[in-house]
Image 1: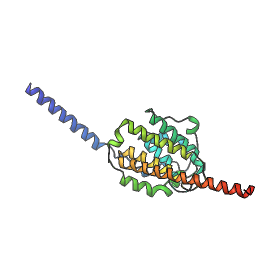
Image 2: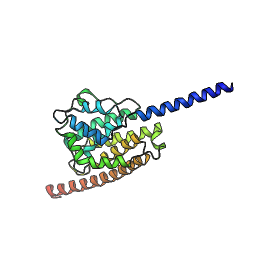
Image 3: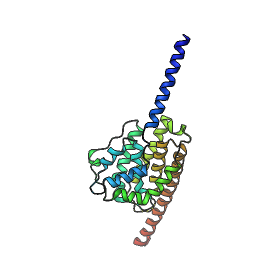
Image 4: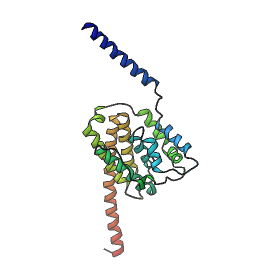
Length: 232
């Protein structure tokens, strides 16, 4: 019996050592900024569709697809031409993740061509932000990223943010707030960084406050225009 236990322990240790050797032998995954730069070089001479991007990146994680789709919107300037198709894609992916299902996108949306030089533009405007996030994101408050219930709540937050992106409002920061929420939450889920997700909730609260005052201003402006037109 003693010899059998000793043999089993040795086999277990050997299994662990073999697994460690396999992990060390695997190539280190590319950073997202490097992935986007590679895509920019790969498709610099030809058209690129959303489906091709999804096919390349989904092998690593759907969170990477969400990060890539939302990167163009982290600047304060609204992008109405991209907000609708990208917002739909983000909403559909988030909805399926919230339901615990594998993400799916309709063929018509996957066939959507991206603007020429899309990845170059993304790197130009968001490359620095992406590289900073790559350095800052690390496992923290891991329990906030592992609970099935909490993860579904996080994806619901991304779904709501994506629906806000669908609003083609020509007002600065209307895209930036929901975009940063999606970027922080998806990045946090990818790197098991609960702190980044918590910051995403804070940004969501700030965005809610912003939209509240924006609505109040719009109502007051409408009243002023009404009084000016009708002389009330």
